[in-house]
Image (tube, rainbow, N blue to C red):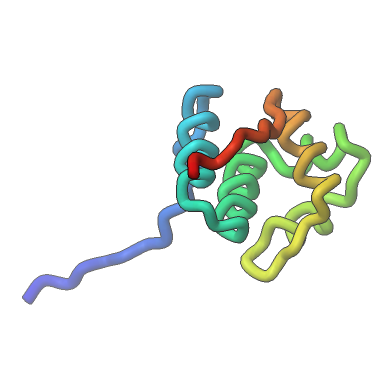
Length: 97
């Protein structure tokens, strides 16, 4: 039997355009899982450059990485700042009954 090599897949490596970002965010929102959404925002942030993002938001780079890590818990303010910096904002809509 031939050996199979498996490597970690990093979604941040394929997020390139605004359309990619929108697709990832919409997919994450459809899951209705806040942790998954935060993880997705972290992938998007990494795809755009965490160091640049931290600098532009006047945040600590390590702190930003930690906030969006597996065990991270970014504040709502941090999430909004990151999304705004990437050219997006949150929108509220009513859930169908």
